Image: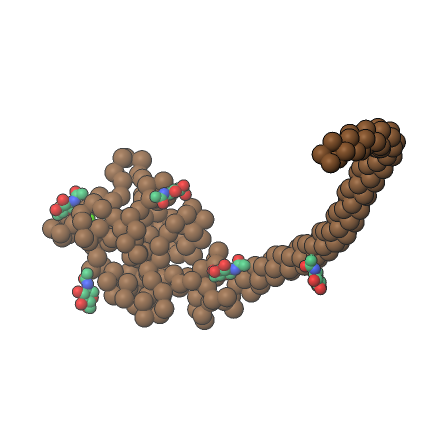
Length: 253
Ligand SMILES: *[C@@H]1O[C@H](CO)[C@@H](O)[C@H](O)[C@H]1NC(C)=O
Ligand SMILES: *[C@@H]1O[C@H](CO)[C@@H](O)[C@H](O)[C@H]1NC(C)=O
Ligand SMILES: *[C@@H]1O[C@H](CO)[C@@H](O)[C@H](O)[C@H]1NC(C)=O
Ligand SMILES: *[C@@H]1O[C@H](CO)[C@@H](O)[C@H](O)[C@H]1NC(C)=O
Ligand SMILES: *[C@@H]1O[C@H](CO)[C@@H](O)[C@H](O)[C@H]1NC(C)=O
Ligand SMILES: [Ca+2]
Ligand SMILES: [Ca+2]
């Protein structure tokens, strides 16, 4: 039984091996077919992947393009608006300058109207030349009650304007009351050494000379000239002297 079984087994095995053989042959053709199928599959997969990538690429491009268009549009919008704002700004700027020019012409053409009655306009300022005489401190206080201050001379132009309007000595807003020899204006500004108009005589005796002949305290207040002489220049004098005086005030706009 065993032998038969084994025989038959052998037979079987032989048949099986033959079968196996034939099956192997079949399998080889099968294998080839499978390989071809696999290759096609791989090709298909590769193609699909390529397609996916291509699609993705197209999508990306499309998105980029849309964005680019939007971007361009917004940029050109902003450009337009920027030019609009610049044009508006330029127009306003020109208008502003023209208004300033008009105001300036008005300032100078209607000079008299910008100063109170009896005051004279010059260079954006108003000047008052008194007819009454007072000592220096009274003059200083009187200019303040008139809305101004004793004149402060800051330039040759202002000096020339003021002196061209006086023929006798007038007080100006300059004194060395606080510190002897240190001349300050009524606004506490010291005299600028490059803008001073003290009398300079040919004999070398200049003002301020702090003359003490008539008073031991010397001279601490400044006026234009002495009496009716040298009124184009400054001279120190006794503060208690009564003189006419020049007031100054800003012009109204
Ligand atoms: C440009 O101005 C117009 C109207 O003035 C406005 O509607 C638009 O939003 C502005 N565009 C940009 C980009 O500022
Ligand atoms: C007009 O005069 C006033 C007063 O002096 C001055 O403050 C103002 O700057 C002047 N205006 C112009 C445009 O010059
Ligand atoms: C003095 O006046 C000159 C000429 O006007 C000017 O250049 C200078 O700045 C003035 N100095 C002072 C301290 O004001
Ligand atoms: C002016 O005179 C007074 C009184 O004599 C004297 O105290 C003062 O030092 C003098 N000032 C100058 C600058 O000479
Ligand atoms: C100026 O005059 C007034 C009034 O007469 C007087 O009180 C004052 O002391 C005088 N000032 C000087 C510096 O003389
Ligand atoms: Ca003095
Ligand atoms: Ca003097």
